[in-house]
Image (cartoon, rainbow, N blue to C red):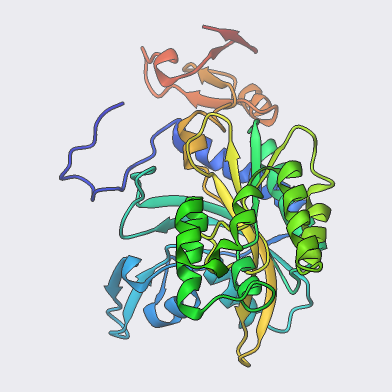
Length: 376
């Protein structure tokens, strides 16, 4: 691949060239078409919004992570979207506030962040997703998780792993059956994320009571049994959450690997009772995530919601979506009516504009030999 000179584009931004650009569009279309079959309707929010409007809804991102500019018309500060979920929430809470619930919306588009992660150096990413506004029930979670799986499978992804989490579990336990001092909660979260049992015990005796949550991590069914044992010790304090997880997992196919990390919080700062990450065999890091959250309505009340986002750039880089239609070279003087028939059958045609053109150099697999395609 031709390297991009450092002075041509900003760091972390890049071009997608043929055939990868077509593959990207093809994969996005497969995902969106799958989501649409479940009743999710497309919205297209703008690339940039007023910074103060956008940051009010970006609960999982800091204002300093935004790429900003100044609107020459209003002279107000603009921010390029780092995530489309917040924009869909704004649309649901304002433009579609009176639409019947549950409201099902889908979206696709680029997002940009000021800094890249260590795993992915790109600052601009493609984000695809679906949001179900008006419910965060177990039934809504079942729908969202299974549509995410179905969409990835439609795109050709195999070896899928779903990792479940309960983002607000620590808050719920700390305020109830396993009380913690306010200054201990963040420390307990950090050590549970690190799976550091020794450091957790060192915080305080109250923090040590959270040790069973480290053991309730790993393959789904074994981890759920440990979580159920903890709930029994606490008088059934988290039985409703466990029932929700069981309901979500039940319809998922046997070919999908399920895991549980009940205290995972990184990237789930704006989710509440339920969250999930999506991984695929052969890829480092997650390719998607989702869960339940709340949208701030114009009247100040919170509206429940559930959704998922996919970040398919690693899939595109690996060749997913690359099954391009066959390209047919049309020599000078070809039968235009026959070429139109072949395009209707699914061929992509490339017509010669002058003598001596090489169809193979135009990435054509066939050429029109009279009335029929012939392979090169």
